[in-house]
Picture 1 (spheres, rainbow, N blue to C red):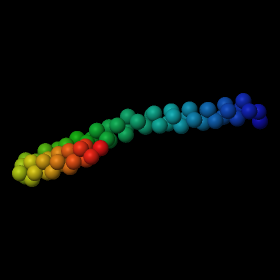
Picture 2 (picture 1 turned 90 degrees about the vertical axis):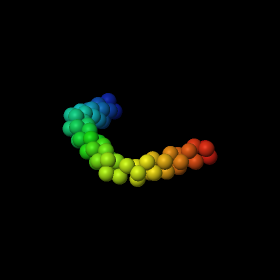
Picture 3 (picture 1 turned 30 degrees about the vertical axis):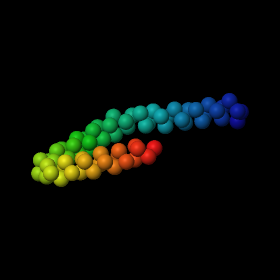
Picture 4 (picture 1 turned 90 degrees about the horizontal axis):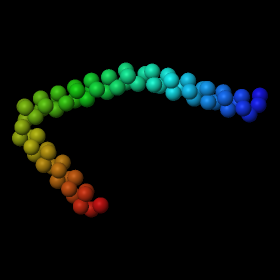
Length: 72
């Protein structure tokens, strides 16, 4: 087996893997979109049920980010 054929085999195998991965991407993107949509819906429902907790949580997260940003 020559070096050229070895390289050709490696490249061919890599191309097949890339093609397989690219073929599965639309399904994975749809699944991620559905998951994010579900999380967004759950977050909105939680804010509707507990608006005070949402405000306090947002303040706490903002405060933590500000502290971290100040020290960097």
